[in-house]
Image (cartoon, rainbow, N blue to C red; front, side, top):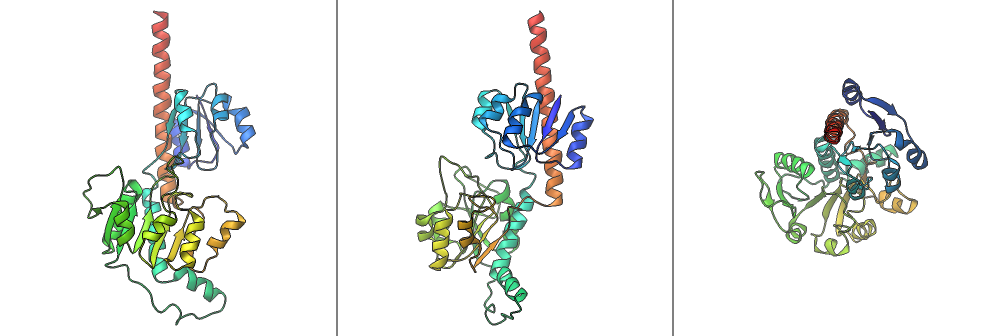
Length: 316
């Protein structure tokens, strides 16, 4: 069986696929090239760059498995793929620790003005007085919206930092963590820091917009290492300008790379940014490669067994 890999894979993952006797093709393709090529493959492995659209799925005459090395599936038309009987896979746990650690890094750095003072000192300034009123995270309340794999890892680390942790997740009714489950409205009202860890659902729309900002504490700190679109960027900029939000950190954006208009937010003096690197650690990439390779091998073996059984039944 043949596997197309369009956004790369770690060597450990590739070795697993090769050991299973699969034929690998690794190359970057334009959308049109992908549509023209996909018919020759039984499986495709992507990351975030490649879009597996309806057109790609329709062109995949041999396609059995669509695999995404990562948490989200927003670049894959999952519903349509499943109507075609395709197996859609991802790696929801592999990068959880890395994203959680980046979240904590942003959280800690904002309270001590590290992004801002770094810029100032590179411009030959000495802003000791301006940045002399830092904030300790100890004893502060962190509100986590989305208590899945990543939100759970963030909670563990925040508890270790002696923060009070509250969380809202409509799908979580109990937890063994030292976390208090609350309503979304209560979380917005009592949190000193708010961090988001949930996918962007087009049917639901943004989770944080003007109405939510109005319910927050004055001087709240917001962190989004989840998905672009979860926070309405224009409303966040307005909240920063009014000082409702004291500081914000963003690893994800509505458009990636960001549009020129988004740089009004990115360049705001009280915003810390990173270029969607939450899962970009050596350890996470290795785990992603291994996990997605193992899942693809398992899925293709199951598909092959099913075909053999069907052939046997027809012969009988």
